[in-house]
Length: 165
Image (cartoon, rainbow, N blue to C red; front, side, top):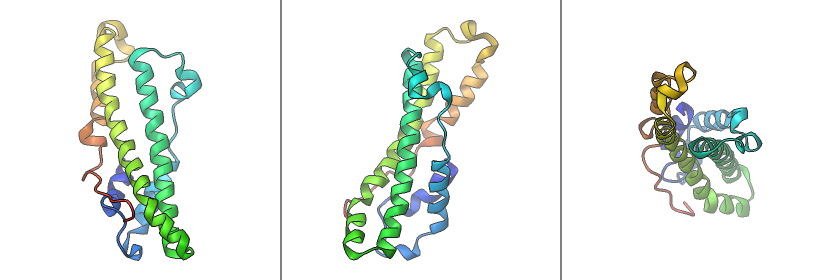
């Protein structure tokens, strides 16, 4: 999240007219960190089929986050390279479509922010500390809820990208 939050203000409203002024290091770091994201085994599509209720929702949210974030940052980086070094027709295509990739990164983090809500509600619904005992304590749930909260996971400012920017 830290790498995405550092790079986000550079692209939140679309790419600037001249991309050479962008912090390529921040974009590169966000791209690398997103590519390194791994879905826990239990959340993989095949294993998640055994989860029910809110557990399956949390797994789906996390899978969605990882895929959107990874692809979004990869495509933003590729678009910047195409704009800077590609043929004019490729550069126009990249600039016309980069808004989609920027939106996908924003959507990824919005999705991540929903996990805390789902986790907290599911924990209470399934009996909380009484049912989970020491395997999942209220303090652990609170910590996860804070980590995956809107305040922590969402990107600010809200994307203001215009297609063809």
